[in-house]
Amino acid sequence: MTSVAIVLGSVRPGRAGEQVVRWIEEQARQVDGVATVFFDLRDYNLPLFAEEMPPSMQAPELPEAVRLRTNIEAQDAVLFVTPEYNHSVSAVLKNAIDYLPPATLKDKAVGLVGYSWYGAAKPLEHLREIVSTFGADVREQQVGINLGSDFQDGVFKPSDELNAQIRELLTSLA
Ligand SMILES: Cc1cc2nc3c(=O)[nH]c(=O)nc-3n(C[C@H](O)[C@H](O)[C@H](O)COP(=O)(O)O)c2cc1C
Image: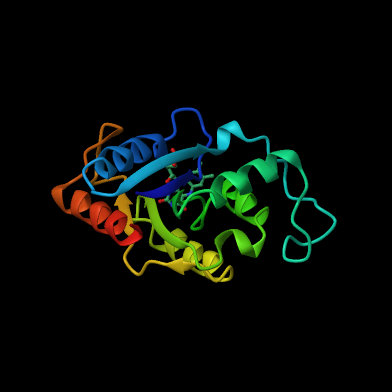
């Protein structure tokens, strides 16, 4: 069984991302050999990164950063789910990633999911670049969700095509 950590880049009340995570969890139940674990950044008290040393030189010792890191390291793969904030990933997600030493994601299978009014092309591109610096094994396929066409009145209505895309990505991670 492959364990996949889901890390969502939104902590807002009423965040659209929570519907996306619930959908990923539901789709994962239909993929053989995959179990997901949602690590909600709402549950981590991570201040803006202000460690003395870069994580590449010394792993952060802040207990909440250690907790996030060990939780991610304990899983076989990671699925980052990002909203688009000002044409990029959210600050909360970037801040959490900044706390990770390179070893946490090195050679780890990583999948990317994004959502925005434009299918999250820009944050997905940025996130791919960010995660690549860790030497992660970032999957080629990614899932871009459009808040206009894939949501109706604020409710996520994934198409069959999106369902197929996320299952393919989860299968690839497995
Ligand atoms: C600070 C901020 C910046 C945003 N910038 C963009 C943007 O550049 N492009 C876009 O399509 N949507 C943008 N949005 C709209 C978000 O895509 C939308 O609010 C989405 O629901 C955010 O995800 P969340 O609800 O899970 O936090 C922005 C929203 C916020 C809060």
